[in-house]
Image (cartoon, rainbow, N blue to C red; front, side, top):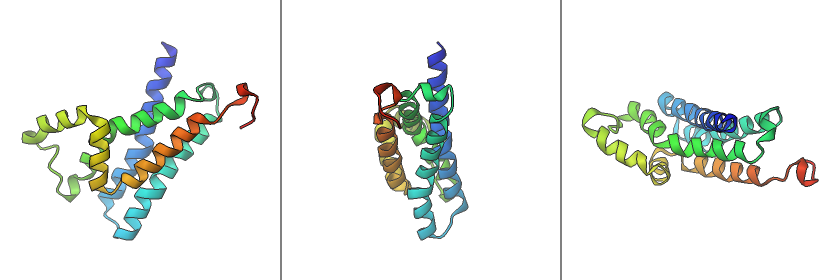
Length: 149
């Protein structure tokens, strides 16, 4: 049960560290070049930095594979909701009462919905980078394999 609590926390941390800055970038409406640069490099960089800091601290260092993978699950699971919230200032209609049922059906297919919605929101590059980075992080051998990290 204790492991399940840690994994739920990691999913929440992953979702929060990725999607809160992403939504802020959408809400602030910066110039296009700055906006796309932040979504592609700064937002995933913050999520990867969070993974790095947590992976060096106890008790999180005991979950070498679970930490990055559950952070990644949180990012992909919360993606449709976060993207829909981020698009509200630009006129997004996903969360209006007459669209809510359709949105919930879309959210149920979150891997596809996150991919498709991030393409249109400008976040696909960042989602791809953080996915690649956290998968690589999960595959890095730890001290128990006899290799220093």
